[in-house]
Amino acid sequence: MFKEKVTKLLQEVLEEESSLFLISKEIQAGNKIVIVIDGDNGVTLNDCMKVSRHIEHNLDREEEDFSLEVLSSGISEGITHIRQYKKNVGRKLEIIMADNQKVTGTLVEADDEKVKLQWKAREPKPIGKGKITVQKEQEIPYKDIVKAKVMVTFN
Image: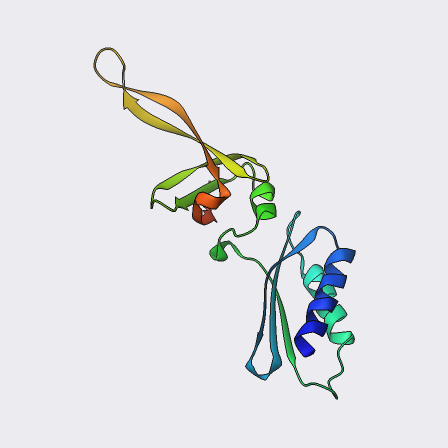
C-alpha cells in the first residue's frame, strides 16, 4: 500500500513537471525512499524540492514513518534513458556495446531506436605512405548498448 501511494504521488508530480523524468525509484528497508530524476533541461535544486514536497506533504508520518531523498542523475551514473541521450546531443560519449566493443565520439543524433556517434580517426592513406585523418560515424541501436556515459572534457 505504501509503495503504491509513493508511486502514484511520483507519477502525479512528474506529469505536472513534464520536462522531468524518472531514472530510478527505490524503497529500502525502514521505508527509506530514494528517487533519482533527470530533466530534458537538467535538474535544479528547485525541481528536486518540488518532487520531494509533493510526496512528503501527501504522506502521513503518523500512518507510516519514512525518509525521503530526491536526487538528480549525475554524470557518474551513466545514461540509462532515451531522453538522456536526446538531451546530450553534441556531447562526447563513451558507449560499451554487448559485444564489448567500445566507441567514443560526439553524439550527433538520438531518436527512439538508436544513437549516432561521430569521431575523427587516423588511418593509412589509400595510396602512398603516411596517414590521413578521416571522419568516422556509427549508428548504434539502444538494444546493443550495455553502458553509456558522458565524457567530461576540460578545455
